[in-house]
Length: 271
Image (tube, rainbow, N blue to C red):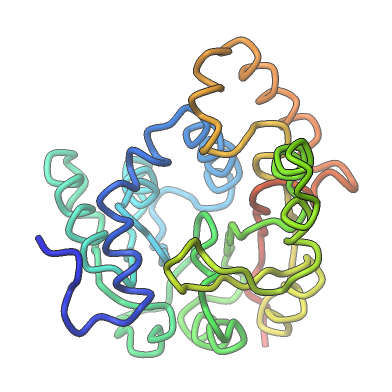
C-alpha cells in the first residue's frame, strides 16, 4: 500500500507512514510494554467489564483489544486509515471482533460520531491528543458523548522527562535537554507535524467545567524512552528495578509531574 495516501492531510500522511513501523518502534519494545502496562494498571481499575468505552487515537488497536479482552465494548477511532487497517488485521483472530468497532475518525471530527447511546468512559493513550489543535473543542465534543460520572483516561506528553534531560545534557546540548520546559509546541522530526505541550494545570483548565481532574501519574519516569530499548534489553534486571521505582513514585508529589507521558484521570461532571 502506498504511504502517500492521496488526499490525506499532513497529520494523516504522517501517521499512515508511521503505522508501518509503529509496532516495531514502540509496541513490541521492552520499554513500550512497561509504559503500556503502567497505563493499563490504572485504566483497568476505572473502566469496568460490561461497559461501553470510546477510544481516541487508537493506533493499531492494542489498547482496544486489551479492553475487549476484559469484556468492554470499544468504539476505537484514529485519524490514520493505515492504523485502522492494521488494527482490523490484528483483531481478526482474537475472538474479540464483536466487541471492537474500529473507525477512521480524526479527533477533530468527533462531533460527527453517531452514537446510539452515551458512552460509559473514554480513553486516549500515548500523546495522540497532543496533536490536536483545539482541545477545548475536543472537551465539548467528548462531554456530549459521555454519561455523567464517566471516567476518562488521557495519556499525554510530559514536559519534564529525566532521561531526555540526561541524554542531551551528556551531549552538552542543554537547549534540546530542556526544550519541553521552554516551548509550547515542538515539531515531530522533519515531518512538519507539531505537537502541543501542556502543564497539568493547563489540562485541568481546558477540560473544565465538563470534566473534573481526579488524579494523575507519571509514565516513564525511571523507565527510559523507547529509543533506548536496545540498551534496556541488555539490562533486564535493571529495567525490572526501574519499573518498580516507577510504581512507587509515579503518584508521589513532584514525581507525578515527571515522565515521558502523564496519565490524567478525569470524571465527567454532572451539569
